[in-house]
Image (cartoon, rainbow, N blue to C red; front, side):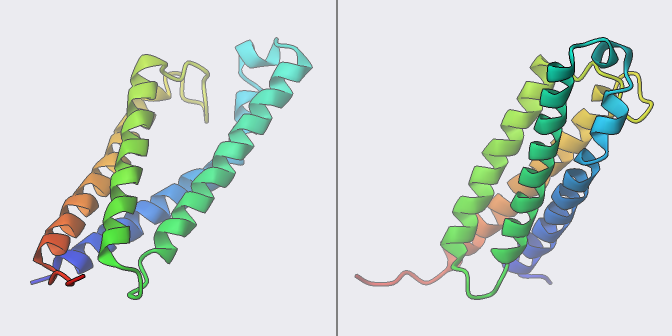
Length: 148
C-alpha cells in the first residue's frame, strides 16, 4: 500500500504537469482570443493588455507547476508540503469561484462557451491539491513530534 506521502506526491506531480501544460497553452491563447469578434473590434491597447494578461498567467502557471515539482524533493519537510498544498487548494478554489462568477465569454480555441470546458478542469486541479493536502495532513499527524 502506498504511503500518504507517496500518494500525495503522485497527485502533486499530476497537478504540476497540468499547471505547466495549461501555462504553456496560455501562450497560444492570444492568437485565438484576438480573432474573436468582440476582441478584434476593441482598441489596440485593449488587445495588447489582453495579450499581456494571458502571457503573464501562462508564466505564473508554469512557475507554480515548477514550484510544486521542486517541493516534492525528499528533503522538504512534510509540514512545508502541507502548508503549500493548503495554500494551493485555496488558490484553485478561488479560481473556480471566479470562473463561476465571471465565466469566460470570449470564444477560445474555436469553443463558443469555453467555461463548459474550463470549469471541470479547474475543479479537477483544485481537487488534486485538496486530496494532496489531506494526505500530507495524515502523514503530518502520524509523524513523530519533536521535543523543544
